[in-house]
Amino acid sequence: MLVFSLELYNMKECTVCKAEKEYSDFYSDKRNSDTLRSECKNCHSARSKKYYLKHKDRIIDQVSNSFRYVLYGLTKEKYDEMVKLQDNKCAICHKKETGSWSNGKSYKPVKPLSVDHDHTTTQVRGLLCDNCNNGIARFNDDPKLLISQQEGYYNG
Image (tube, rainbow, N blue to C red; front, side, top):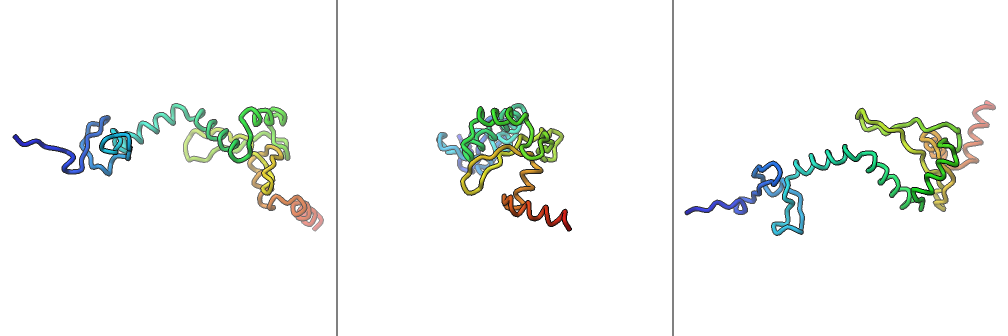
């Protein structure tokens, strides 16, 4: 009796779509005896995308909170307190943020206010809208340069 083994041909069956695929179609996973995930890359990608779409708001919030904490030492509670103190408005122009995530999709939530900080000390100065944050960045966060350019421009 001839026994056919997928291993001889570097093939494996996906546990989701049940298709026989090459090893290269599976992500590695050292926890399994063959060091490969049980689902193929396509099935894994589809499952991950479905999960992301279902939990998008929570995932974006978690990533933003982690990012703020790692870079600026701001907890979610501290950031939320700053947003409340600024009435959810930019510290410079006093307008609410209107910029949105540009991902080419129909779902575009309004961005949270950006954390403005001193690039040398990383000390947080306040929360800014995208326009003001990008504007001061173009003047290298130097208020003297910004003021001199403004005076020169308006005084001709």
